[in-house]
Image (tube, rainbow, N blue to C red):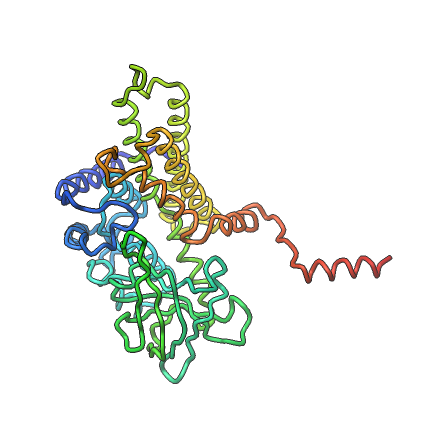
Length: 411
């Protein structure tokens, strides 16, 4: 890939940044920033304003084919993500826009695309991801919620948990076991469903500070039309792997940490200790410079993945995993670095002693989320090892016993 942007790409990138800058000026003074901001009730008017403005500009359809109202390219999606991340703007439903839409375009039939893409591209339909269960998170293939085919519909029973935005979503997509006796990964299907359907119960899982992002969802004989399946029955694992590639190649997070680093640099330039700005401390300068280099490396990786998608080549599974691991680690290290530099001030948020609106106290506590969500970093490292480096998978205890028995017999 040639990482030098063309004149047209530079022009488009500037357009996204200028548009987002103008929209950021309308942000309410009491707007709650952070990972949870997109789902807080008090934020919804401004979130809707942003979403409708993005839809009007066609920015929710970036990289889509022209027949579905698409404009621009996958690189434009990266530029838009950078601009939104830099100005910390809400208004893009990550489940519908960033995950489901590209998955439908890659693997859905024409009927499914015609039915669901317009609502996503117009910003009229919000989605949630029905993946995790009480005993199936990182090991997603272990889902137990069932969807049993009965005539021209599926009947769903079971539970999902940690479902982000289920309380606001119009529709949901998820993995369900359609062959209870089948082999793991070959017994699950990818289904779409109306979240207002009879039999669906949504219970909030609130933070200790009462913020509401996650939910548990219960299914009690929920009837879903059979034509709302994506891909073939019992082949949902392949669909889910395509989706997580789009989910994990996330430049928004890269740009967000870049802006946070700028905020930290401002603090170091303005704050004096012993009569000198913190920015003149060689230890702090080195740590900040190291973080800047890592952020630029992660941005380059995100550009590379987008370039592969732009060439109609789905980025390799391990490359998306590498991007996800890298940015998750950067979030944690930046949160720790900011808190260390601010010292006691970095431990308070809602206080007159808080600095920079208490962003570092919040950052420190929430940074670990990116190392868990979208599949834990430990799972991603396995994917990188197995699919990227062709390393052998570890033997199970049963396989080890068999190998030892075989070796003993050979003697």
